[in-house]
Image 1 (cartoon, helix red, strand yellow):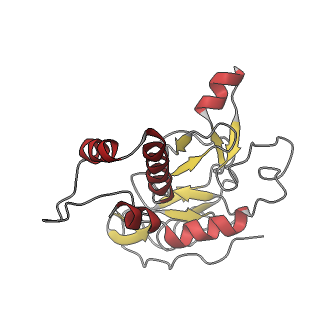
Image 2 (image 1 turned 60 degrees about the horizontal axis):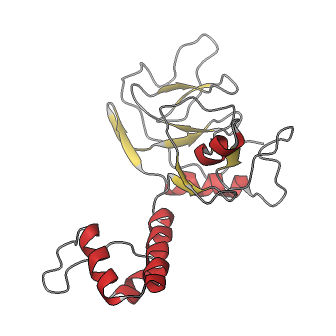
Amino acid sequence: MLDVTLQDGGYEFYCPSCRAPMQWFLVRHILSSVMSDEELRKSLDTINENYVKGQPDIRQCSSCGTNQQRDFTKQWDNDRSKVVCDECTHKAGRVMFFCWYCRQPWRPGFKGCGNSKCDGSAAKLKELQQCCTKKIPPDSECPNTRACPKCGTLIYHIDFCKHMKCKKCGCSFCFVCMRLQNSDESWPCGGAYELCSVAPRQTSLPD
């Protein structure tokens, strides 16, 4: 059961008799009773890796190996893909960043993370295609992540209405229908809480 679950990328375990989910402390207790310390360590590492792969908002810093989770309630530091590593920051005594997409240390002075092998655009498009949906009153089933139609910065909807202003370039647009605010500051889709059509998931980024 363990080998099949881990090979399939799983990290949750179920009772073979009733299929009820097993609590983690019980799984660890069972494994520790039948495995050597080395076997247990490898199994736990694989379970942890599978868990991280299944969580879209968790990434592992390549420098220290710790897992970091994005907190969308915090202010982004100019770029959504620029993430603070708490462990590296603590060790270095100064704020240390890594790239959310390639997981390499952030290199200042470059457009993006500065790592030549980072394919950030492809990763952004993948996130736009796979992100969850949420209800934005009064509409429903709207992707919770959109790319700014002007600069391509990914924006995550946290709360309140459908009208959005990109903090990076200042572009104002509707998060639901993706139409831009008019030059006279009116909205082609109506008021902040008026019904409008949900635009499909984005498949390209602005140049």
